Image (cartoon, rainbow, N blue to C red; front, side, top):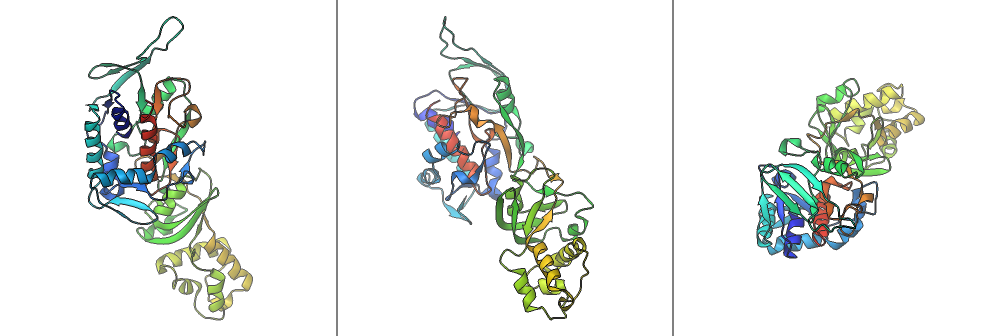
Length: 388
């Protein structure tokens, strides 16, 4: 819709084809129904890609402030929840209605629901010019067009209509695709590795979580299958199978300073730590750490300084090995996608196929949690809309 609006405002005739029966379901369900539509502090560093500089151009030309001005023009009230995350005061439906209204004003035509059955490309050569090289066959009709924009999203949340059709089109044209995988998703563990933590399903703590050089400090949530919560969702985009993630369960404290205060106490280890962390969690974690270190749960005065240091290291660097993720059904985004080396960062057009564009989540640009992925949708759609 963003691209269609911009192209329509330039006088281009635009038809928007969508296979879904309900418009913009991913907007509707986002942010608990209030749509975390952007982030005030959006920078290129908030995105993951095999080509880290690709997103800079589009983000610079259409910023969070530009989208904020857009919604303010439509009288949509919003608030900042935390860390620059902006949400509608009322409903995500306001964002959808705004985009629909602007599409209508720009003369955008709709064909929905309608599935595209085939895309053909008739390239120009020395003997002939082709003004409308794309031939689309849909379940309703046949359409000839000069430009084709693929804005099909990723594989996440298939229950609302997500599909791999965008990757299929890329493959048809010989365009490289970075293998997709679930992102911003909960992590699972082998049954034997996390059994005891299932008893505290629903409990959350603030922690610092790290993997592959990325570190996030937010809440982590224990689930019946493993770990979730904002910090885990963030780090899941950096985690790879067979890798560990490191969790600092005392990000605001120094464990050795705590131990020093109770060095000669008869209090048991977990009773000391339960002053800083939920008791149920501490009892299980202390058992896990001590077992790994071949130590017993005992009173503080019975540990040596070296043993306390090893326990402190375990608290600040609790290492866990996820077995996988909860998958696309629960993933907020899809990592990977159309290789950005195939695209112009200025126009989003495929270098080798004039008139073919890819925008949004189908491209190998994935944002952090907190409104960044919507901003990429607005920015990449705007960029393509200026040239399509």
